[in-house]
Image 1 (cartoon, rainbow, N blue to C red):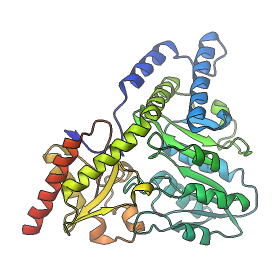
Image 2: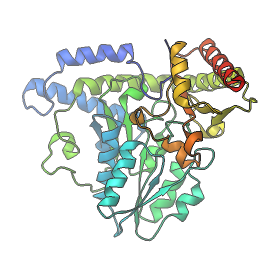
Image 3: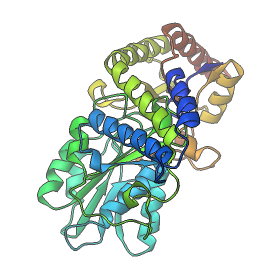
Image 4: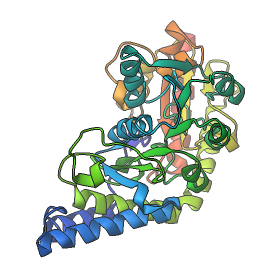
Length: 379
């Protein structure tokens, strides 16, 4: 099986796997325990915290480990809402946010918060002018993902954050798709909080992190929580965090070369598709505003589910959107937010590249998809 679903999850890096085994057998004690074994785990944990702070170039006091990106999104947003600097009950977010953010916003809306859900333009981006125009006197939070997980478009988070500073508006950004794939240092220093997920950059599943600016006086979501300085309850997964940290260091060391290789793979794939074909449509933004390893696309008149099944039959693993929404009958939130509705929206599918992807792989898949589009049009 040729794997083209790296945006959903990645295989565990072998070096990270070795770290996980070593930490599981030698640093298994609870990091909160006061004996020497607990202190050893706590020291390892703090070393991981410092390493993530170094990678993001932020204060380690603001790094908190979680069970994944979804929890990091939830707790990061709630931390910001507990530390708002002015009166107000208005939040701005996107109509295409990850379900962990979108569903939380719907819950907050039901509890009395006013929430504005922004639409995407045809390139899969939130127009900067539209974001700023949605701001009100009572706006206290803006939450927008950095990289769209379905079409790969990047958002102007730093520009939005600069505007928000003078308005005392806090900013959260879901960076799950971009951490380890492109530099985030300036973004991290500009926002109130951000989230990452270990399995998106070859770390273990069930691991993640949130950064919350330590200058913010946030309150624990669950009162009395002792772990992670009150950020979340439950025994800290020290072996998983150690493995995630190892994977993060490797991802950062390979970032520049992999970014170049992903652009080359994308170009090879699009060339193999002969995208002049009227039946094939590619979604996303221009090169400088795009995660190159994610290609959102459709074949006119063919449901994405059918394309996915045909690809699977031929030995290619692709997806019809984010894994969190698989099984739902509704179309992709990204397509709907971009104004593509109904039958057209259900034609969407996603290809995503990773370390195991070769130029021959993408050319073969492109050729197959082109043949599939021609075959369907002839039927």
